[in-house]
Image 1 (cartoon, rainbow, N blue to C red):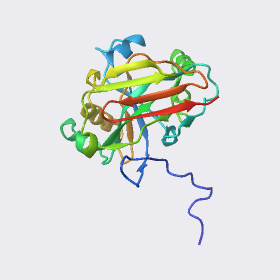
Image 2: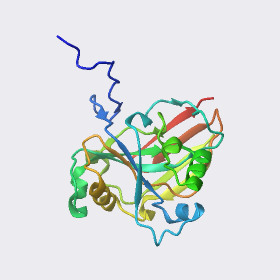
Image 3: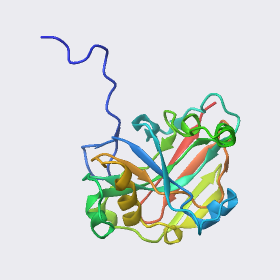
Image 4: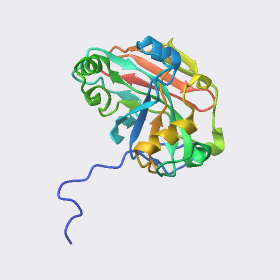
Length: 230
């Protein structure tokens, strides 16, 4: 019997789910840019004139490890805490009115960004992949099923570095709601079960030093923490 693959197949990334023995399989990680007005302003953009835009990370970006290595080729790694949507039912051109039926649950996550590489890419008009799409660049809490947390529309989102509050906002301040994000994203991509959607970060993004201890979460959903290695 010939093997199924000509080289060893990598394991399917999976995340812990609250109250379940089975895990959540990660297909793709989508991210929404500038979805909080104050963060858009701190990055030098006008939130009133920009439609949502998207970038992505590979599946192995998602991690629930308590230790995240400091990535190579950067001296300016930034934290961006985000509300995360876990998709259970895919589709294209999903109507916003029915979008929440596609959601399995929610989590909090951190979009780790090599900001120096992103700044260079922006100046040169190049993609953001080297800045955003590296392994372990999306730490997440456990996934919480909708049956346990509902569909949060408001609630504190925060991130602490070494015990000090670094980011804080409220889900109610998102420019584009979860149903609107799902509907817009599904115009460009056929969503699949196992997709994660990071819905943008509030103001207060900043640098992390090697050895930092990071705690993050969304009120009423979940919290987690990780240690940033050298």
